[in-house]
Amino acid sequence: MEIFKIVAIGLVGAFCYVFLLSTKSEIAPLVLLATGIVLIIEVVNYLFISISFFKDLASIGEISGSLLTTVLKIMAISYVLEFATSLCTDLNVKSIETKLAFAGKLIIFVISLPIYKELFNVITSFIS
Amino acid sequence: MAFDIDIIFKIAGIGILITVLCQVLKKSDRDDIATLVSLAGLIIVLMLVISMISELFIQIKDIFQLY
Image 1 (cartoon, rainbow over the protein chains, first blue to last red):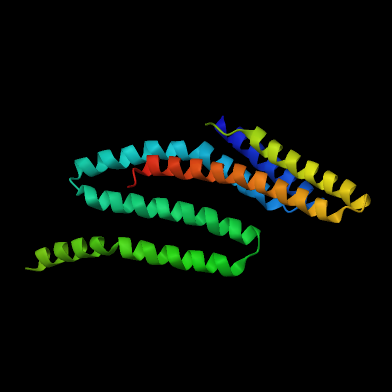
Image 2 (image 1 turned 180 degrees about the vertical axis):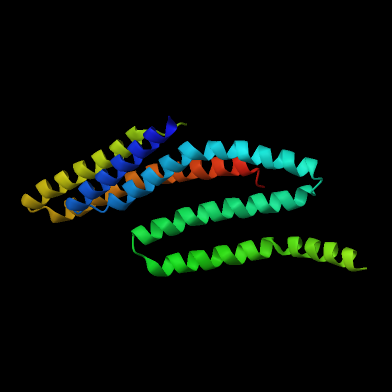
């Protein structure tokens, strides 16, 4: 099963981090970053299946393509942001983490504006 | 390129090597060279990790069909 390999990578990375911390080298947080990347790259391929599934659903429910791309874009932004903010908490750099989160929320809000317009059109079409 | 666990071992190995070298250099009271060695080690590991990050972001772009 895939999960054992992932857990093994995570644990090994964590122990390497602790070991490098003990030798007080500044390369320790980089080991954390490397294990994070290896773990995510292992798993990110599974997302492809779910996205093609969503595309089929969209084509069936004749949802307009632009909505789906915005949703996918928001998902991608949130994944990358979660990766960065969790790394910042490890380095206990609180200020950068809050700024990153704020920037991400702002970008997601700006990107999702057309969805509000679409929703508004649908509602007004019901009313009138 | 498929990352595996050997990247983590490589980085950890570089870290250990750098700390050992720094200790040796400090004991033979060449502190300036010790700082340079640790700086060089940090730069090497940073280059490696940055190439991994770019690989990750390229894969995310492909999967989410962004841009």
